[in-house]
Image (cartoon, rainbow, N blue to C red; front, top):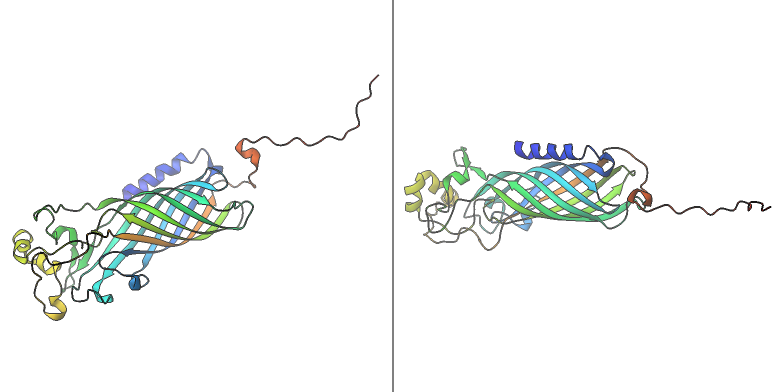
Length: 286
Protein backbone atom coordinates (compact mmCIF):
# COMPACT_ATOMS: atom_id res chain seq x y z
CA UNK A 1 0.00 0.00 0.00
CA UNK A 2 2.91 2.38 0.80
CA UNK A 3 4.22 1.99 -2.76
CA UNK A 4 0.86 3.02 -4.25
CA UNK A 5 0.62 6.06 -1.97
CA UNK A 6 4.15 7.10 -2.97
CA UNK A 7 3.22 6.85 -6.65
CA UNK A 8 0.08 8.87 -6.01
CA UNK A 9 2.17 11.61 -4.32
CA UNK A 10 4.47 11.74 -7.35
CA UNK A 11 1.44 12.39 -9.54
CA UNK A 12 0.49 15.21 -7.17
CA UNK A 13 3.88 16.86 -7.72
CA UNK A 14 3.44 16.64 -11.48
CA UNK A 15 0.16 18.58 -11.44
CA UNK A 16 1.46 21.40 -9.24
CA UNK A 17 2.56 23.52 -12.20
CA UNK A 18 -0.89 23.54 -13.89
CA UNK A 19 -3.47 23.56 -11.07
CA UNK A 20 -6.31 25.06 -13.16
CA UNK A 21 -6.40 22.01 -15.42
CA UNK A 22 -6.59 19.50 -12.57
CA UNK A 23 -9.24 18.22 -10.20
CA UNK A 24 -8.44 16.29 -7.06
CA UNK A 25 -10.95 13.50 -6.44
CA UNK A 26 -12.27 11.70 -3.37
CA UNK A 27 -14.19 8.42 -3.45
CA UNK A 28 -16.14 6.64 -0.72
CA UNK A 29 -18.32 3.60 -1.22
CA UNK A 30 -18.25 -0.18 -1.30
CA UNK A 31 -16.13 -2.94 -2.83
CA UNK A 32 -17.25 -6.37 -3.94
CA UNK A 33 -16.13 -9.32 -6.03
CA UNK A 34 -17.41 -12.06 -8.31
CA UNK A 35 -15.73 -15.46 -8.42
CA UNK A 36 -15.93 -19.07 -7.30
CA UNK A 37 -17.13 -18.14 -3.80
CA UNK A 38 -19.62 -15.51 -4.89
CA UNK A 39 -22.86 -15.13 -6.75
CA UNK A 40 -25.28 -12.46 -7.90
CA UNK A 41 -27.54 -13.10 -4.90
CA UNK A 42 -24.60 -12.37 -2.56
CA UNK A 43 -23.51 -9.11 -4.17
CA UNK A 44 -24.93 -6.79 -1.50
CA UNK A 45 -24.35 -9.16 1.43
CA UNK A 46 -20.62 -9.38 0.66
CA UNK A 47 -20.11 -5.63 0.12
CA UNK A 48 -17.40 -3.99 2.24
CA UNK A 49 -16.24 -0.35 2.66
CA UNK A 50 -13.89 1.24 0.11
CA UNK A 51 -12.25 4.65 -0.38
CA UNK A 52 -10.03 6.36 -2.91
CA UNK A 53 -8.02 9.45 -3.86
CA UNK A 54 -7.04 10.70 -7.28
CA UNK A 55 -6.28 13.44 -9.79
CA UNK A 56 -7.92 14.31 -13.10
CA UNK A 57 -6.35 16.23 -15.97
CA UNK A 58 -8.95 18.20 -17.94
CA UNK A 59 -8.03 17.75 -21.62
CA UNK A 60 -11.13 19.67 -22.68
CA UNK A 61 -14.66 20.22 -21.40
CA UNK A 62 -15.66 16.56 -21.81
CA UNK A 63 -12.42 14.55 -21.82
CA UNK A 64 -10.16 13.72 -18.88
CA UNK A 65 -7.13 11.63 -17.98
CA UNK A 66 -7.43 10.29 -14.45
CA UNK A 67 -5.04 8.67 -11.97
CA UNK A 68 -6.61 6.98 -8.94
CA UNK A 69 -5.58 5.05 -5.85
CA UNK A 70 -8.45 2.93 -4.50
CA UNK A 71 -8.52 0.70 -1.43
CA UNK A 72 -11.18 -1.74 -0.28
CA UNK A 73 -11.93 -5.20 1.06
CA UNK A 74 -13.69 -8.14 -0.58
CA UNK A 75 -14.99 -11.45 0.74
CA UNK A 76 -16.79 -14.62 -0.24
CA UNK A 77 -18.32 -17.47 1.76
CA UNK A 78 -19.93 -20.72 0.64
CA UNK A 79 -22.17 -20.67 3.72
CA UNK A 80 -24.03 -17.66 2.36
CA UNK A 81 -24.91 -19.30 -0.95
CA UNK A 82 -26.89 -22.33 -2.04
CA UNK A 83 -24.67 -23.84 -4.74
CA UNK A 84 -21.55 -24.95 -2.82
CA UNK A 85 -22.51 -25.03 0.85
CA UNK A 86 -21.02 -28.51 1.26
CA UNK A 87 -17.61 -27.19 0.11
CA UNK A 88 -17.65 -24.71 3.03
CA UNK A 89 -14.80 -22.48 1.81
CA UNK A 90 -14.44 -18.78 2.61
CA UNK A 91 -11.97 -15.94 2.10
CA UNK A 92 -11.44 -12.23 2.50
CA UNK A 93 -8.81 -9.94 1.04
CA UNK A 94 -7.78 -6.31 0.95
CA UNK A 95 -7.57 -4.76 -2.52
CA UNK A 96 -5.11 -1.90 -3.19
CA UNK A 97 -5.30 -0.52 -6.73
CA UNK A 98 -3.55 2.18 -8.76
CA UNK A 99 -5.17 2.98 -12.11
CA UNK A 100 -4.82 5.28 -15.13
CA UNK A 101 -7.91 5.82 -17.25
CA UNK A 102 -9.56 7.97 -19.91
CA UNK A 103 -12.92 9.50 -19.02
CA UNK A 104 -15.55 10.94 -21.33
CA UNK A 105 -18.50 13.08 -20.22
CA UNK A 106 -21.55 12.88 -22.46
CA UNK A 107 -22.45 16.54 -21.86
CA UNK A 108 -20.37 19.62 -21.15
CA UNK A 109 -20.73 20.29 -17.43
CA UNK A 110 -20.00 23.99 -17.95
CA UNK A 111 -23.25 24.18 -19.92
CA UNK A 112 -25.30 21.46 -18.19
CA UNK A 113 -25.73 20.61 -14.52
CA UNK A 114 -25.87 16.80 -14.90
CA UNK A 115 -24.19 14.38 -17.28
CA UNK A 116 -23.52 10.65 -17.61
CA UNK A 117 -19.84 9.72 -17.97
CA UNK A 118 -17.80 6.64 -18.83
CA UNK A 119 -14.20 5.56 -18.29
CA UNK A 120 -11.75 2.81 -19.25
CA UNK A 121 -8.07 2.25 -18.61
CA UNK A 122 -5.43 0.02 -17.01
CA UNK A 123 -4.70 -0.84 -13.39
CA UNK A 124 -2.29 -2.67 -11.11
CA UNK A 125 -3.77 -4.18 -7.95
CA UNK A 126 -2.53 -6.14 -4.98
CA UNK A 127 -4.47 -8.72 -2.99
CA UNK A 128 -3.89 -11.46 -0.40
CA UNK A 129 -6.67 -13.99 0.29
CA UNK A 130 -6.95 -15.05 3.93
CA UNK A 131 -9.36 -17.03 6.11
CA UNK A 132 -9.75 -18.46 9.61
CA UNK A 133 -9.60 -22.16 10.43
CA UNK A 134 -12.17 -23.89 12.61
CA UNK A 135 -10.20 -22.85 15.71
CA UNK A 136 -10.25 -19.21 14.66
CA UNK A 137 -6.60 -19.02 13.66
CA UNK A 138 -5.70 -16.48 10.94
CA UNK A 139 -4.62 -18.25 7.72
CA UNK A 140 -2.83 -16.71 4.72
CA UNK A 141 -4.11 -18.96 1.94
CA UNK A 142 -1.26 -18.57 -0.64
CA UNK A 143 1.15 -20.03 1.94
CA UNK A 144 -0.68 -23.37 1.80
CA UNK A 145 -0.82 -23.87 -1.99
CA UNK A 146 -4.24 -25.48 -1.59
CA UNK A 147 -4.48 -26.61 -5.23
CA UNK A 148 -0.93 -27.90 -5.53
CA UNK A 149 0.69 -24.74 -6.88
CA UNK A 150 4.41 -25.22 -7.26
CA UNK A 151 4.48 -29.02 -7.02
CA UNK A 152 1.48 -30.52 -8.84
CA UNK A 153 1.54 -30.86 -12.64
CA UNK A 154 2.04 -27.44 -14.26
CA UNK A 155 0.38 -25.35 -11.55
CA UNK A 156 2.50 -22.39 -10.53
CA UNK A 157 2.14 -20.22 -7.41
CA UNK A 158 -0.06 -17.25 -8.21
CA UNK A 159 1.24 -13.70 -7.92
CA UNK A 160 -0.39 -11.34 -5.45
CA UNK A 161 0.15 -8.33 -7.72
CA UNK A 162 -1.83 -8.43 -10.95
CA UNK A 163 -3.08 -6.29 -13.84
CA UNK A 164 -6.72 -5.36 -14.38
CA UNK A 165 -8.83 -3.40 -16.83
CA UNK A 166 -11.08 -0.85 -15.09
CA UNK A 167 -14.37 -0.11 -16.86
CA UNK A 168 -17.15 2.00 -15.46
CA UNK A 169 -19.27 5.08 -15.42
CA UNK A 170 -21.84 7.06 -13.53
CA UNK A 171 -23.72 10.31 -13.26
CA UNK A 172 -21.96 13.58 -12.39
CA UNK A 173 -23.56 16.78 -11.07
CA UNK A 174 -21.79 20.15 -11.36
CA UNK A 175 -22.31 21.98 -8.06
CA UNK A 176 -20.20 24.82 -9.49
CA UNK A 177 -17.62 25.08 -12.27
CA UNK A 178 -15.02 23.96 -9.73
CA UNK A 179 -16.88 21.36 -7.65
CA UNK A 180 -18.65 18.24 -8.83
CA UNK A 181 -20.27 15.27 -7.11
CA UNK A 182 -21.63 12.07 -8.54
CA UNK A 183 -22.30 8.36 -8.32
CA UNK A 184 -19.95 5.82 -9.86
CA UNK A 185 -19.90 2.10 -10.58
CA UNK A 186 -16.64 0.47 -11.68
CA UNK A 187 -15.99 -3.08 -12.87
CA UNK A 188 -12.47 -4.58 -12.86
CA UNK A 189 -11.70 -7.33 -15.35
CA UNK A 190 -8.75 -9.33 -14.04
CA UNK A 191 -6.47 -12.01 -15.50
CA UNK A 192 -6.32 -14.25 -12.44
CA UNK A 193 -8.72 -16.83 -11.01
CA UNK A 194 -7.05 -16.89 -7.59
CA UNK A 195 -8.33 -13.75 -5.85
CA UNK A 196 -10.40 -16.18 -3.73
CA UNK A 197 -7.74 -18.97 -3.76
CA UNK A 198 -10.14 -21.26 -5.67
CA UNK A 199 -9.75 -22.16 -9.35
CA UNK A 200 -9.27 -25.75 -10.55
CA UNK A 201 -9.41 -29.23 -8.99
CA UNK A 202 -8.46 -30.94 -5.75
CA UNK A 203 -5.02 -32.40 -5.26
CA UNK A 204 -5.01 -35.69 -3.37
CA UNK A 205 -4.90 -35.31 0.40
CA UNK A 206 -1.77 -37.46 0.59
CA UNK A 207 0.14 -35.35 -1.95
CA UNK A 208 -0.89 -32.05 -0.35
CA UNK A 209 -0.04 -33.33 3.14
CA UNK A 210 3.37 -34.50 1.94
CA UNK A 211 4.32 -31.02 0.77
CA UNK A 212 2.48 -28.71 3.19
CA UNK A 213 1.21 -30.86 6.03
CA UNK A 214 -2.21 -31.78 7.36
CA UNK A 215 -2.98 -28.11 7.98
CA UNK A 216 -3.08 -27.49 4.22
CA UNK A 217 -5.45 -30.45 3.76
CA UNK A 218 -7.78 -29.04 6.41
CA UNK A 219 -7.86 -25.66 4.63
CA UNK A 220 -8.24 -27.02 1.08
CA UNK A 221 -11.38 -29.00 1.99
CA UNK A 222 -13.67 -27.85 4.79
CA UNK A 223 -16.83 -29.80 4.07
CA UNK A 224 -15.99 -32.16 6.94
CA UNK A 225 -16.56 -29.29 9.38
CA UNK A 226 -20.30 -29.20 8.66
CA UNK A 227 -21.25 -32.70 7.45
CA UNK A 228 -18.24 -34.92 8.13
CA UNK A 229 -17.74 -35.59 4.40
CA UNK A 230 -14.43 -37.14 3.37
CA UNK A 231 -11.80 -35.21 1.39
CA UNK A 232 -12.69 -35.34 -2.35
CA UNK A 233 -10.85 -37.61 -4.76
CA UNK A 234 -7.93 -36.20 -6.73
CA UNK A 235 -9.19 -34.32 -9.79
CA UNK A 236 -12.61 -33.49 -8.31
CA UNK A 237 -13.89 -30.04 -9.24
CA UNK A 238 -12.98 -27.33 -6.73
CA UNK A 239 -13.49 -24.22 -8.90
CA UNK A 240 -14.05 -23.02 -12.46
CA UNK A 241 -10.78 -22.02 -14.21
CA UNK A 242 -12.63 -20.85 -17.33
CA UNK A 243 -14.07 -17.82 -15.53
CA UNK A 244 -11.61 -15.28 -14.11
CA UNK A 245 -12.37 -13.42 -10.90
CA UNK A 246 -13.52 -9.79 -10.95
CA UNK A 247 -14.00 -7.04 -8.39
CA UNK A 248 -16.02 -3.84 -8.21
CA UNK A 249 -16.03 -0.37 -6.66
CA UNK A 250 -19.22 1.68 -6.36
CA UNK A 251 -20.17 4.78 -4.41
CA UNK A 252 -19.89 8.58 -4.38
CA UNK A 253 -17.19 10.72 -5.98
CA UNK A 254 -16.34 14.34 -5.12
CA UNK A 255 -14.16 16.42 -7.45
CA UNK A 256 -12.61 19.80 -6.58
CA UNK A 257 -10.44 21.93 -8.88
CA UNK A 258 -7.01 22.54 -7.41
CA UNK A 259 -7.16 26.23 -8.27
CA UNK A 260 -10.54 27.88 -8.67
CA UNK A 261 -11.36 29.78 -11.83
CA UNK A 262 -14.38 31.00 -13.75
CA UNK A 263 -16.25 29.26 -16.55
CA UNK A 264 -13.92 28.13 -19.33
CA UNK A 265 -14.23 29.86 -22.69
CA UNK A 266 -13.21 28.83 -26.19
CA UNK A 267 -10.25 31.20 -25.94
CA UNK A 268 -8.89 29.02 -23.12
CA UNK A 269 -8.20 26.37 -25.77
CA UNK A 270 -6.47 28.72 -28.22
CA UNK A 271 -9.57 29.63 -30.26
CA UNK A 272 -9.44 33.40 -30.96
CA UNK A 273 -12.31 35.54 -29.75
CA UNK A 274 -14.55 37.04 -32.40
CA UNK A 275 -14.03 40.78 -32.78
CA UNK A 276 -17.05 42.89 -31.89
CA UNK A 277 -18.58 44.81 -34.77
CA UNK A 278 -17.91 48.52 -34.67
CA UNK A 279 -20.62 51.06 -35.38
CA UNK A 280 -18.70 54.32 -34.83
CA UNK A 281 -19.20 57.17 -37.22
CA UNK A 282 -16.70 57.11 -40.08
CA UNK A 283 -13.78 59.46 -39.81
CA UNK A 284 -14.14 62.69 -41.74
CA UNK A 285 -12.23 62.89 -45.01
CA UNK A 286 -10.81 66.27 -46.03
